[in-house]
Every structure is written in structure tokens, then in C-alpha cells.
Amino acid sequence: MNNKMKAILPIAVTVIIWLLPVPDGLTANAMRYLGIFLGVILALILEPLPNSAVGLIGCTLAGALRLVPGPNGKVATLGQSLGFTLSGFVDSTVWLIFVAYMFAMGYEKTGLGKRIALLLMKKLGGKALGLGFATALADLVLAPFIPSNTARSAGSVYPVVKNIPPMYGSFPENEPRKIGAYLMWICIATTSVTSSMFFTGLAPNLLALSLIGKTPGVDAAAVSITWMDWFWCMLPAGVILFILVPLLTYVIYPPTQKTFAETPKWAGGELEKIGPITRQEIMMAIMAFIALVLWIFGSKLLNATMVALVVLCLMVIFDVINWNDVISNKSAWNTLTWFATLVAMASGLEKVGFLKWLGAIFAHYLAGSSPFVVLFGLMALFYFSHYFFASLTAHTTALMPVLLATGAAVPGVDIRLLGMMLAGCLGIMGILTPYGTGPSPVYYNTGYIEKKTFWIFGSVYGFIFFAVYAVFAMFWFPKIL
Image (tube, rainbow, N blue to C red):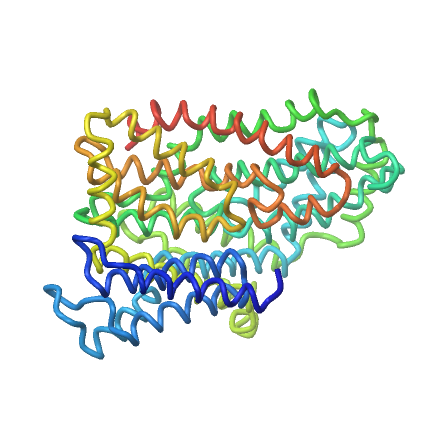
């Protein structure tokens, strides 16, 4: 599809929605807002423009047309409309995502992320299974601090791992199964798991949690989920899946070579090249430790975003990164704009009354169903609908508010539990397709794994991931929350 069609289709969808008759229970402004929202979601999928630009255009258009009502349902004033357009920029979760990108930059700039990966390769890389676990552990160690799995896996782990297959004559066109295919699959499957294991392991996790508090009729404070809430919920399933990935891959997709004597030597040589650990690496490790400790134990003193901002200031003060690094990090500022506008757009669905109206309709059809069935059904729908999305962020923005509103309209459904069940599976659903999560195309396009195999394994691992996750989501999460 050419760029012209990619631009025309979102506009066409918006116009069509605007021209449809307004259903009973909705206002004309709500219908117009829905048209803009669906146009934005389609544009996020097709990408005629950068995602942050799409979000800003949609949010600005809705504000300029004063589609979102002011207090008491009255027509918004000019100031209130501007306030809606900019409302996402004061959301604390958006700033936590931004600062976490700075953590990722700190790992990259200091070289600490590369050093960690090489140390693991040196210690565990002599045999195929050990090499698989070393690859997985490198991602796991970085996951709590790097919310972009693209930066973490494709940016830190892959540049190290890609050097190993050629040492043994394993190339995409020649003996890919010798070791290359095995390692590439472990990389993408592991980063999907670690993205779900930690609240800060994937940017859409944070976006999803911010949407829970915007569910109609829900007290945001009452449904808040902390870093530790997330960690304890995800720990059992996360550990099982993390260990399962290298073991299962070794059984059903084993490398044809089992020992790799040169890998530890190569990793040792690379460590010698980069030299002894530097002051900046030590400081980066200290800053990461401080952030982790405060996220775990300091939630009553500082919220997660304030912790991140404090650590960012310390990183600048101690020259782990400098201010020019901060202001020149395009990915971080781009993500800030993107997520801020999407948070505002998602909140607008509630403010115009659309979510309450849609939730009531779904609740009518779900009448008589037990909360258990509703929770499982909504979770399964959210997970497997990812086959139709090329972006976890677009998926979250499009479906999570609707499913939360549906759950809220069913008596007996715990919205905090439902929100955690939906948010917690965002990372693992990325395994389903070659476009399911940020680093997927990187490993898909290496050519080590046949396209048919990538799709088959995506479905197989996707169902296994869901089965394990669903058991703990249904029976373990309620005990924690």
C-alpha cells in the first residue's frame, strides 16, 4: 500500500463515522470524537506519518473542534479544550516512560549493557543450552530498566549475539540450524517474556496501567497498581516461561552443534578490548540499583515516576549522561509525545460518554455470565486479537479502554484485577507474529529462521505462553491484588 492510500484510509474512516446516524445514548460530538479516534488507530497501524505526529494531529483536532465536554457536560471553553489536548503531558506514567528511555541510553552510552551480555556469554556460552540461557539472562538483567524491548533486545543483546553464529559457519543461507536459528528464536521469545515480567519492561505496560484509572465510574486511586504489585503478580508465570523458553527451544528446535568452545574465548577477547569497568559503568549500575530499591521499597515515600526523575537528575549530576544526551534523545521525546497524546485520546472516549454507552451494551449480552467467565473471555479476546495489530501501543489504546468499560458494567468484576490481567499479557502476546512487537522484524529479517517456521512457532509459543499465563492470572493474581 502506497503512502497516499495510507493517508486516505484513516481520513475516510473518520468521515464515514461522522456521516453515520447517531445511535441512541450518544451525542453527535461523541460520534465525531469516535471517528477521530478510530482514524488515529488506523493511522497508527498504517503509519502514513510518524506515530507521535498521528497522535498529536488527532488530539489537536478533537480539542480544536471542542468535541470533549467541559465540567457537567457543558460545551468546553477554549481553555478547557486546550487543557484536554495537553492533558496527556501531565500524566505521570508518560514521564516514567520518558525517563526509562534515559536509563536505556545510560546502559548504551556507558557500555554496561554490552559488558553484561559478554560476561554471561563468557561464563555460560560453552554449550548450546548454556548459550541459550546466557542470551536469555542478558535480556532479563536489562528488562527492569529498559522499557523499550527494541532498545533492549535489538539494541543491546542482538549486537552481541549476532557475532556468534558466523564463528561456527552458521549463516542464514548456510547451516542456519547449526546455532543461528536457535539463538535468534530464544532472543525474540525471551524478550516477549521479560517484557511482561516487569512493570517497566515494556512501554505499553505503563500506558495500559494509566488507562485503568480512566475507566468510567472507577476511582483511579483505588485501582492503582505499583511496581511491586506487578512484580509479585507476574513472578510465578514469568519464571516458568523464562526457564521454559531455552529448554523448549532446545528440545523442539535444537542446534545441530552442541558445544561452542570458541564463544567464551571470543567473549573474553571482546571484554579485553573494551577494557576494565569504567567509572560511568559503575555509576550506571549504582543508579539502576537505587531506582530498583526505591521502586520496590519506597512506594510510600515516592511514586515510581518521582523515583525515575530523581535518578535521572543523579545521572546528569554524576555525568553518567549529560544534558545534551537528554535533549538530543529523539526516541525518548518522540515516545513522550506519542504516549501523551494517546493517553489524552483514550481518556476522551470516557469523557464523551462512549465507553459507558458501549460497556452497557456489552454488559447486556454478558448478563448472567459469572465474573470468572467474563474475566477469562476478555483476557483471551485481548490476547489473541493481537494477530490484527502491528503495534502493542495501538492495540492497547484501541481495545483496553473498551474491554475495561465492558468489565466495569458487569456486576462482580474487579476492574483492578481485570486491568492487571490485560496489561500483564501485553509482552507475551508479542510472540504471536513476526510483526507482533518491536524487535520481531529484526530477528525475522535475519533470515536464520524460515518464514513458515517463524509463524508456526509464534502460534505454538503464543498458545503455551497464554496457557501458563492464564492459570496464574485467574488463580494467583486475585491473591496478590
